[in-house]
Length: 123
Image (cartoon, rainbow, N blue to C red):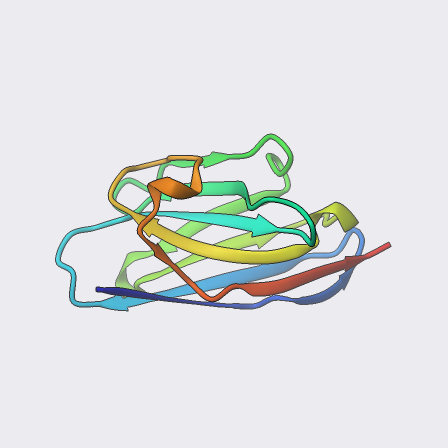
């Protein structure tokens, strides 16, 4: 069983930055792929980024490429999402997810989810 807890969300002006953290815990021996999704009010949950737990390889949605960076800290069982040059359309609840396949972009590919952290970008 894996538990995921996100933190680092908040209110920021357009052009600003935030760094989200996802702390993973549990008794599973196997590694996981990790991903970030977000959901704005009235919209479907959308893919943001994915990272391979073992290799560190990353993949990003076109909407955030060049602005967001995902990373992991294996020693601390944590993944991060550095968000720069934030835009109002980046607002939403951001979720950390873990699964058994690497670099998938659909929510159904992930088995474990955090509770979400709110990101609000003002214009």
